[in-house]
Image 1: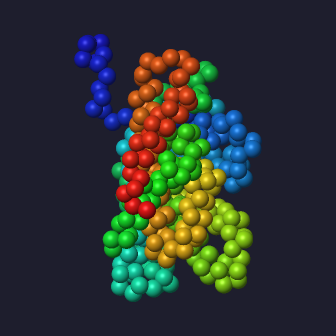
Image 2: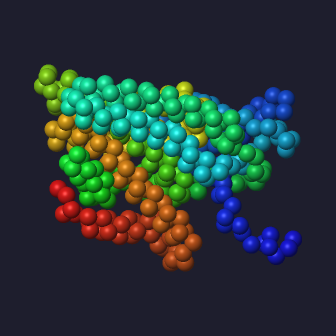
Length: 166
Length: 192
């Protein structure tokens, strides 16, 4: 290994890492379920927390099942580390939340300026929200096509390696 | 237009939800260990607070006010917020399953975030118009997200700092939070 490779490349896009478990295999595709992170289910107050009321943790994780091309010979039950680019997460949040918010507020301010009535502004904002959600759907479809939103396999998780840092 | 700009500055900076009103402190300390999670949480909260501000104002003006049911506002707003979170979750899932996989984790945390309820109660008690209420909700949540990201950046850097073992982690976080709150006091007096 030469000296240049020893130096960390800080200009490279940072990856957000997460742990996931292989739950099923279909041909060359592995289905994975993410492990709950320290922010919610791993929290010591999980049993008393109100967030638990909205569907069980198992249900929520099942809903977040995702697939990965199985190049690494994964088997059911394997724990692996997956990663997505940090800017992909930022871009995803912008698409999901910023586009509908921008159209919602834009429509509301315009309606208030033109008509000055609460009811018309409310209707305009709801219409703006629906339009924004439709635009977000188009943009998200385009992002998904480029593969930017898909997590990638990084390595197998070691024994005792856990996402629960807290 | 000037009053809207002042309302936004006041809600986002002067009366910041976290550092001036001390709401939402649990997510402030819990989700600010990394910038990416802080951004995810901040954006999701911004969306939910704005949508629930609209819904809370409508429920207050067209249901609680005409029937003189203001004493039920806390219970009603909690229900509206839970519904707004569920709506957001279902919408994100429908808009893009890939986005939902990435962002879905932050949504249930928002239901129990007191900043959302605090903003709703503040905006109905101030007797705002609909556009003011929505802008107030939006600006408050922008202030919330700003502080979350600032704190996450500071904590990411602090994790590399050589501090005494007793102060590492949460104690250090509390000291940084208090210094940030002091810094935000500098905005007080700019607007009411």
